[in-house]
Length: 278
Length: 335
Image (tube, one colour):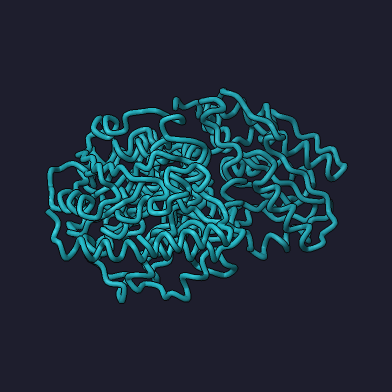
């Protein structure tokens, strides 16, 4: 069981991060933002940054830090929210999201000064980069872990399976992937687009697989992450977290339309009201 | 003329000895990329990546992020065609020190269009942060490693394998963004790279005997392309400039020279010899060079047209000065 204090902290931060997501997305105005895929992954990202990873916002290049690679780069709002709440970036910087000259682009752009490890957004690539980073740690006998957030839609990409098979071959048990299984990708539900048993695929590729039913429940997510972090089975680990697309905002939950779009004022006000009353 | 057998094999092993940061990745083309012995020598630094090039690119980026210098060894086509997105976004954009050792440039393979990298220089030149090199002989195969290693960022290398002639003295290594002047003359300036250099060298003596002055520059750095010697040579060419490249004429050496001439307002004629916006097909290197006009006779004909002067040079004349009797004909290697 995850420590109650940690669970409370992650829940508290997750709530703040949801609000950050809405604030950034609204501030982006007509440029729009990926709300749904950020909100589904909040507990995973919050769990990593506030409960699992060894990291120091004051020292983003600390050699033995755990690495976080957000391969589903379009969900960057969750990442930027975590960077804000941990103190890698200021609130003022947060509000520059998608602005001219902002370093917080619509997909993460590597910026070690502010804790962004890897450029991502071309789906699948970040995961393979994470595999390479995990291999490097193995070669050097470093103890840190590499955590990689992958989308369920992203698992359509061929490189995911090239990399997954390869990671198992290299026995990268310092690598923990988390699939944010929110069930909705850009053009439809993952079931409609490509109805495959990804658990079986990950297993076939040689990974330790655990399914978390409550992917938006801090306690369940933390428990799974701790289990995988502390396991040295010789296999890479994947947590398939069943989440809700757009979690926390009623009109976004499970919605195809709120995968990515601009947020008009009336929706912003409703979203804020819902979060404040949650 | 010395023909060196597989110059990369031993040279790369020796060169890597005191460089623990150097690691090698291949995609199921280990011996074909001349790193079988390297693997046996440094098994801990050799990573077979299966036939999965997309992952190989991004995985290499991950290694580079953590302080390693990956040398990806495979055929050129499997570097710039299949996994271009990963190459660009995981490696080139973040300017990581990954070295692409790209074999079978252009028509240097009978393997057919799937294995002939005929537009790689164009694509790699167009890729920001990328340095683009091409080896033309055994000395360059040996010295390109130092050149690549001196670059802070990704480097694409058109590499030669198998039997490679030594055109340049061992004591004169490849240098970044420096051309070699192989002959002097003020009628035409000819620029070549890679395996086409040997062709222009064959033509040099007969052209001189026919009274045609050819300034011949050998190019081993496609990008950056800033050696002032090139501009001087173009300015000094009475009748014009000819490029001869083992590549499509669009986007490669011919284009680089055209850009340079236009940017410097040089109103001279430029003839681009190479693949004329076409794919090739599977055949021996010598056959294809003749078919597509990449050989010494094609160059002589282009010189005649440009200067308006018949040289009387025949194909047997050029065969007579073939720098190594069988070399160019004996290249019909398997994959």
